[in-house]
Structure formats: C-alpha cells, structure tokens
Amino acid sequence: MAKPSINAKLQDITPYRQQILSQPLAQGISYQEVQDHLANLPRSRFPQTAYNNKGSSPLIQPRGGFSTFEAQLELTKQLYSAGADFIPLTIDSCTRQNQYDTAANLLQRSEEEEKDYLNGYPLITHGYEITRELYRNIDRPISLRHGTPDARLLVEVAIASGITEIEGGGICYCLPYSEGFPLDRSLLYWQYVDRICAEYSTKDAPIHRESFGPLSATLVPPAIAVAIQIIEALLAAEQGVTSFAVSFGQTGSMIQDLATAKVLRKLTRTYLNQFGFKAVQTYLVYHQWMGQFPPQREKAAALIVGSTIISSIISADKVVVKTVNEALGVPAAEVNAEATSTVQYVLERFRYGDIPTESLTSPQIERETALIESETKTILQTIFDLSGDAFWESVFRAFQLGYLDVPFSPHNDNANKLISMRDANGSIRILEKGNVPISDQDAEIEKSLLASKHNKSDKTYQQLLADINIMV
Amino acid sequence: MSNNVLAKYRIVLGVIGDDIHVVGNRIIQLALEESGFHVFNLRTRNRPEHFCQAALEVNAHAVMVSSLNGEGEYWCSDFRQQFTNIGMGHTLLYVGGNIVVGNRRQEDVVKLFKQYGFDRVYHQKPDISATIADLCKDLKNG
Image 1: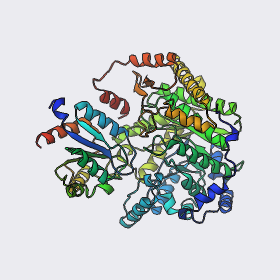
Image 2 (image 1 turned 90 degrees about the vertical axis):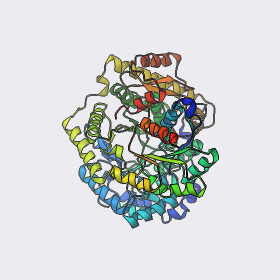
Image 3 (image 1 turned 45 degrees about the horizontal axis):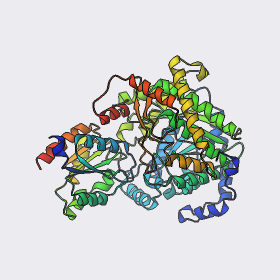
C-alpha cells in the first residue's frame, strides 16, 4: 500500500533544478538572488499574511492576463484600485502548453499591432526582471493562474518575479487542460513545483499553493472534486508545502455548495492530520460559477452577486470572481475592475458574520453532506489501498482504473465512464458511476434523487446541454 | 431530411489553436450524431492543416471549426485557401464559438470570417440546432 508519507519528499533536487534553469529562457535566475528578493518583499505580499489578517468576509481574487507588459500593468493598477485582495497573473494558453516560440511570435505581433493575440500574459517570454516591475508598488499577494501540466520552468520564473501564490496541481492542471500530456509525468513535474515552493518558503513567508477544484467545471460530482482536492493537498504536503488552499466551483445548487464546503473543509484537515501533516495551514477557496455564463450583462451581474453571497455563507477564505463579460471572451481591464468592486460591495453590505457553516443546516443539507462525505471516503480509501511504491503512483493508477473519472475532461487518460446529470433542485447526480468505487447504497441514493426530476427532454444532448447551461 | 439520408454526409469537427475547451465540442458531436450525421471529431488543439488532412482523408462534405478562447482569428485567415490548395475548395466551411479575442461587433466578426472563406459564421450563437438546420439546407442545395 502506498499511503501519503513525508518519506515521499524529493531529496536533493539541485541537479534537477540545474537542468531546468540551464534553459536559455531561464537565464539569470539564481536561487540565492531570488531568495533575497523574496526576503525583501513586504510580508503583505504573501498569502499567509492576507489570510491571517482577513476579517469575516472572503478575500477577493479576480483573474486576468494580457499579452503585453503595458496592458498587464494597467490591469494590475485597476484591479488594485478596485480592491482586489489578490492580484492575478493569468498565463496565455501557448505558454501553458510549453509552446514558447508561438507565444513569443504572438507577443511580438500583439506589440506591433497593439492588439491581443494571446489570451494571457506570456510570463516566460517576458521574463522575471520586467515582471517584477509590474508589482513594484503592490503590497498584496500576486497569484499565478494558469493550467500548465509541466509548470517547472513557469513556476521558477514566477517565484523569481515575486509571485507567492501558485495555483495548480498534477491532476487539476492536467485533466481539464490537456488532451495528451501524460498524467504520470504531470504528477511528477508537480512534485518538483511543490518541492521548489517548499524550498523558497520560510516560516512566516511561505510560498502558498492552491489547487483548482472546478476541474472541467461541467457536471463534476462533488465527491470527485473533493477527493481530488484532498489528494493534491496530500501530494503537496509530501513535498514540504506548509500553506495550501483547497477549492471548488459553484455547483449550481446552494444545497450542494453548502454540503461540499463542509465536507471539503472537514476531510482536508482529517486526512492531512492522519498522515502526519498537522502543520500544514489550509484554506477554502470558492470559485464563482465556472460554467457557461449568461451573455446578458444583467443576468451575469445577478449570477455574480448570488455566488458572492454563497461564498460568504459557506465562510470561504477567498472567492475567485467572474465578470459580466464572461460569456463574451477575455474581459477588458475596466470590466474586470468593476467585477471586483461589485463583489466587494456585496460582501460589505451582506455581511454574514462569523456564524459557523455547521450551524446552517436542514435535512436536505444533512443528507447531501453525509452522501458526499461517504462517497469521498470510499473513493480515497480505495486509492490508499492500491499497491505501489508511492502515493502518486496510486493516484495515477486510480485514473487508469477509472476510480477517479472527471466528466468532460478532454484528457485521453480519463475513463469518461461516469455520467452525471442534474436532479430537480439542480444538484449534480451520478447517473452511471462507471468504475468509481462508491458504495452500492450511495449509488442507489444518487439514482433515486435523480429520478425525482420530471422535466425529461427527449434527446441526451439536449438534457446535458440544459444541465450545463443551467445559468444561461 | 431523415437520419438515413444524413448518414451519408461526413462532417469533420474540431477545436482550433491551442484551445482545450472540449465541452462544446462534445455536445456538438453528440448533437450531430443524434441528428444522424457521420462525424469525425478531431477534438482539441488543431491547426488548419489538420482539418485539411482529415477532410481529404474522409472526403468530407463539411468542416466545422470552433474556438472558445478567441484564437480563431489568428489561425483562420487563409482557411479557404488551404482547402483550395488541396483540391477541397468545394467543402462547406463553418466556424463558431467565441472566435475573436475581446468584445467586437457581431457583424464585424461575421464579415471578417466570411472574408476568410467561411460559408457560415456563428460568433457567440450557442444554439447548435440552428446550425444543424443551416447545415441540412446547405447540404441539400449542394
């Protein structure tokens, strides 16, 4: 059996790092110099400080990345002024796929024509020195938002740039973002990322890691998302990460959101403690609706307000915000800043206070909580019981066997046997469990809850489309 | 047209650029198949030449290109020309999704992609059944 263990920690990574840093695009990065740069940053640039000083409301995190330095600087200033607690740096999709030449060509074209040909900031192409300038006067943490299965070089450049929060993980940045990137390599490359985050961390200024719970953001049953979040927290803890946020995306059902938050918070702590990682600080992040957004600004604004209130009710530590132009493509800086101030407005005016989430309950919420908890535990126990030398190997095998199965993942290694749909109240139900090892009893509950749905369309694609487009 | 008739029509489908958004692609595949078409799905991360090769290989009647992250504009500018170059200039070319980066006027985007040689342009038109109706009409008019 290969359970999570501190013994899985990579030992001397120096030769490995020299290999990564010998690439021409990493030119100039020196461990000592980066360490000094981080030591000289104000503590307010680190997520742990932001989380420690937060009041009762969730912290606010927009997303955003533009091709050119100038556009990114303008966005950074606007989001800062609008009150974002975390400043985002979203990376373009060429860089995410390690296609640095394409990224460089498209950046050049963007600069020449003053038009965006990239859907994010090509950090590796710009390099760490100029990127530090983006944040010269910023006293809040910078968050790297991407979707990169092999993020070794990207994260080296990010930390060298003074970015202290790294989103991602071997599963959550491979399964939803790549069609063919081998999952085992992604898991190993993210061990490296976790390890260097740990190496650069100090006790009062850790490099913070965050997992990406929404996954494909399309009818993902909560138990699958929760299990994967806990696995990524454990894999990061194995490499010495001490500050970690688990996350999930708005499900489309308030009952399921409340239940998911309860189970995710509780079980993350339980399993970290069980495997000897008591010292790891954990936080809960809530993503506003990650599925198809309504194109009408009024409806989009209403959706953003609704999910802001949910983030408060579930006592999220941070909320990742969307904009009213979500359905229309990459939003302009002004629109992004507007979204940030709207969320701040809602959080300040609809204060939920310090009422523990546990006290907010109903028979439906209790049933949902028990179901997600039972399913998650069964899935995780089955993975812990798989043979293998290391926990990451068990995780890899779990995907090969279809024990973990993410609906609508584009990845070839995903089983695609699990089929999920929404029930009458909008909760995501498992119609066919495929090889996912939930108990027969839980599978029956899922099916019986789904049977309560009256409005059955005649075609499968229409039913799925309606369920996917629930917010449109 | 009935399902039996539609089954003879071969449709090449795929997402262009480094875009990995697969949900719409899956749904379109399912919708086309449920309507009776013979679908060849290239899924994600395709270049124009991948669509050309596939269209040539299966002797496609129509090619449907999608983009959600806006990369369409960069990759599609000589799409029709590339099909003409391989002797497939007669193929119906459709494009849809969020096909340009940023907020641009619908009519400007349609005009741009028609210039690139597409027969139908569905910029931010999520209703796939309208596209399927157009496809049936265009195929019938041959």
